[in-house]
Picture (tube, rainbow, N blue to C red):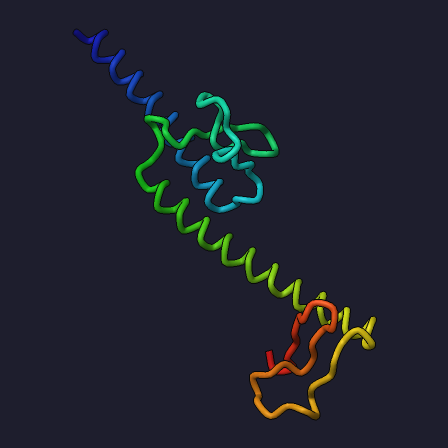
Length: 137
């Protein structure tokens, strides 16, 4: 009986350590998503990991039996943050590109600043494609 109990405790202890290590990996993914590769949309084989850490190749599977319950919620929050950050960066970059184009090629733009009757009308409009710029945006 004593041997059986010791075996159970040893198994339980190693399982707890493994679970703790997995939780640590999931937390690392949440804290540092750019250090991980996300394969969820690229997977062709279900045995391939959902996430792999770039530095050392440590892998995580979302559907694993030992994935902590909190992971799904944290992943959604992380993805929302990344999507918002990424889209605002892209929009800002596109706007900067248009302003740079106006500076580099002013002859390709129409200047409406002195002709505006409605403040919602753009200050500048590119002749080629109608892209618009406003000073107050």
